[in-house]
Image 1 (tube, helix red, strand yellow):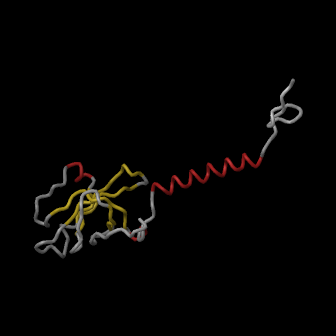
Image 2 (spheres, rainbow, N blue to C red):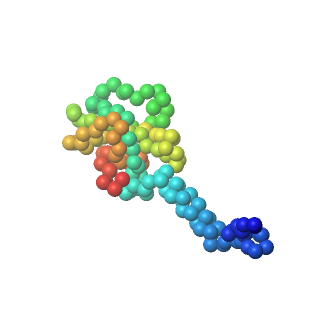
Image 3 (cartoon, rainbow, N blue to C red):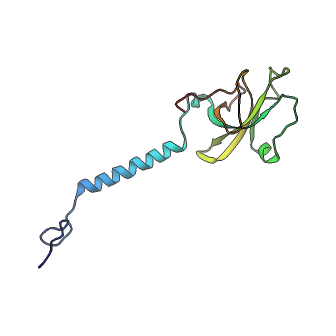
Length: 143
């Protein structure tokens, strides 16, 4: 008794299913595009220089000893302590890092002022301005 393979026609050749081939290509394209979108999430104000960042350290004041290690100094992109107009007593700064170049492993560091009343912990996510000195800001709930 001969059994017929449902994917083969009466001649024994594999039947073509263009719908399945197209579905496979579309699925691959969607997965590929969504992977790229997941690497670099868009942030409100991204075009203006705001980036999603992670707190590395909280610094007590502008005159405090610099805890930035030599590795971090090499990647220090912007230090707002030197040209700050708000260098009064009690001004706090944070060293934060942000990814650049589309690779989460490539990170640059910024030392930026902390707004009054904002409480930061190392590892916390927030937004940092990378083009000029501006106070850090909290991320919106959607980010």
